[in-house]
Length: 567
Image 1 (cartoon, one colour):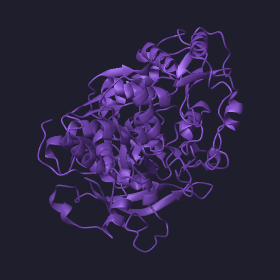
Image 2 (cartoon, helix red, strand yellow):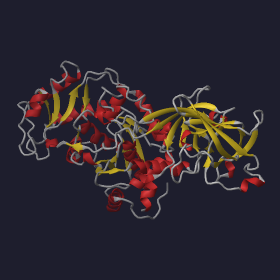
Image 3 (tube, rainbow, N blue to C red):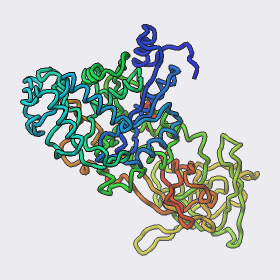
Image 4 (cartoon, helix red, strand yellow):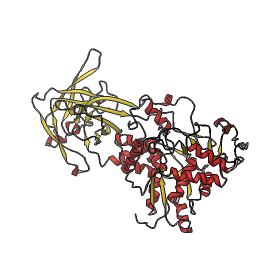
C-alpha cells in the first residue's frame, strides 16, 4: 500500500513517525508471534491487527512467527488453524518463521554468552531459585554456582543438551544482577530441560529456550524494527533490550512498544481457561460458537469485516480497560445488515389453522430477499391452510401495546394475508397448541386489497413444506456479574482469580430449540448467513444434515449498544 500524507492515529504511529524521521529506522518491519498452543481468540486479534496494520500503513512488512519453544502444549493443528485465521482476516505475512527453525543458532548464541561470562549453568532446585530470588523490597541472593569456570559451564550446558540430566536439575541463567529492582533482571533462566517431543523437531532437543531469551533475539535476527506487544510486557522491556544487546546479532536493535491488551466483559480471554473448557468438554471444541476464538466466531457467522470494524472502534491505547461485549455484536449487525438475505424461520412454533382457507389450496407468493438490495433477487414461498408462527406472538390475555395475535385481533403475515384469531385449542395441561383463525382473502400483499392497515406484522412458515430445523441460541459464556478483569503479579504474569473458574460460567450460554424454516433456507451451504425476520442473524452450522439443518444465532436483532451510544 502506498503511503499517503496523514496524521498518526495513535501513540504507536507517533513513535514510528519519530523513528523514521530521526533515521533510527528507514523501514518498518513488524512480526506477529503467536505460540501454537491453542487457536487465536479475539484478544490475540488486537495484536494481530496492530502488527499487520501498522506494517501496512507504513508500507512495511510483517512476518508470521510461531514461538514454539514449549513442546508440552504445541500442535501442528494450531499452526494450521492460526494461518487460516490470519488469511480469513485478509492479511498476508511476508516471511513465515518458527522459533524451532533457530534452535541451533540460539544454542550457539547461548554458548557464546557463556564464553563471555554473561551466562552460567545453575544446579539449584526450582524451590531454591525461588527462595533466593528475593522480593520487590529485598534483593536476591547470588547462586553458589554463579561463578563457575567457563569451561565447566560449557561442558554442563552441552551435557544438558545431550540429555544427561533430569528435568528441573539444571538450567542456564543469564548473569545480570541479583539485586536489580526489576526482579526479571535477577539472573533470568535462558534454557530449561524439557523432555517432550516437539511438534516439528521431534526428539532432537531436550532443552528449550525460554521465551524471554528466544523472543527478543529472534526479533533481532529477523530485522524487526518495532516489536509491538501487549502492556504486560512493559516490565519485560529492560530484559528484552539486555538480551538483544548481549546476543551480538544486530547493530540495529528493535524498539519494543507496548499497548493495552483487549478485555471484553463476560468473555474468557485466558488461553489456559479456554483449554480447560475444551479438555473438560464444557464446550464441544475450540470452534464451539460460545468460544471467543476466531474459528468459533467464523462458525457462528461473524464476518471478518465486523472484526476489523470492532478493532477500529476499540482503538489502540496505553491503559487497560474492559470493552462492552455488545459493541462487538453491534459491529456484527452493521456488517451483516447489507449482506445477509432475509428469510423466515419459526424457532418456537405454534400451529395456526386458517378455517376459511380450502384444505387443498396453495398460494405461491413472491418475496424479496433483501428490502434494500433488489440485486439479491426474490424467492417463491408457499401459503396454505396450516401455518406456524412464533409462540410468543400470541397472548390469550394481551397486555397493553401488544400488537400481535390475540382473540379477536388481526395481524398481517409477512408478504401474505391479514388473519384474525377466532379461537384457540388447549391440551390437557392447559397449554395452547393451536390457533383457529380466518384469513381476509382480499388482503394478499401486492393486491388492491393489501392497503388495509393493521398494527402487527408477523413472520411465519407454511406447515405443508416447512423444514424441521435446530436453532442454537447463545449468550455470553460468563455470568453477568463476572468479567474478564486480570491481576498481574510482580513479574507481569497473570494471576488466577479466587474460586473455581467453572463456577463463573453462565448455565444459559447455549439453548437448543427445534422449529421450522423455509425450504429455500435449508438448501444453502454450510456457512450461509441469514437474517431470520424478527429473530436475529443466523448462520448454517457444519452439524447440519439433509434431514435437519442446524442454525447458530450469530447475534439477536436488538442493538442495545447503538441505543446507549445515542444517549
